[in-house]
Length: 295
Image 1: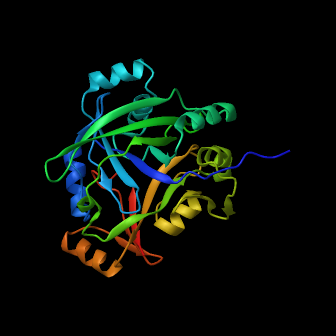
Image 2: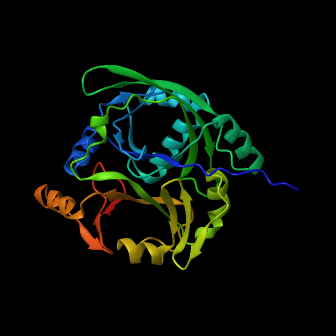
């Protein structure tokens, strides 16, 4: 019997809930990121994205209109419902979702349902984007959701860029030298309990299991699930050995010149530690998870 051909989905972006966009913008700017103009979704949330030259981006996400969000959640919008659930359980800041690029979200939705990991009905929407020169463009997206009831504080979705955002090349230039995302780190006491979810969401069977957890490749980025020992060893962070479920913990960035990044952090009074040849910046208001920087 011929098995269906798999095409691993690359990392597209990360959803980072924040309490307030202005504070997130200031924090990201202090870290040396160039932040795009604020933008509104048609269902009550807003973002201020950081676009990277490897075609990934960060999406700091805030609630612009609680009334619009509540109406969208009641109407079955899985993106908003899961954002509400995350904020209720974990507070207003963190890493709630990994987003994967796809050429066909509808096919992914069918596959997620057949695998038993569907996280809700598909979502299609458009939103405007104001460019640095004052022009305005439009992006359109189709999303398919994947989730596991055992991990209520995390989900994944594939994102089909029906009409890609018209990102100005100036938005790819960051004072901190960041050129892309190398790794996204989750935690869970027994990482392989969620191997199936990640394999099917990414559409990649190959997983690297090790004493600190497991890794799966999503394009140029690695998705890692670490146990408490791994979080302590690589990030100096103590996490619960009994609290179950996937939790977003860290984003690892590639930089062009680590010494220049270190100098910028010292200039901007950014707290960091050095571990394993990387600069580890702990969580702070406007930055809900650990940021690590390496070459």
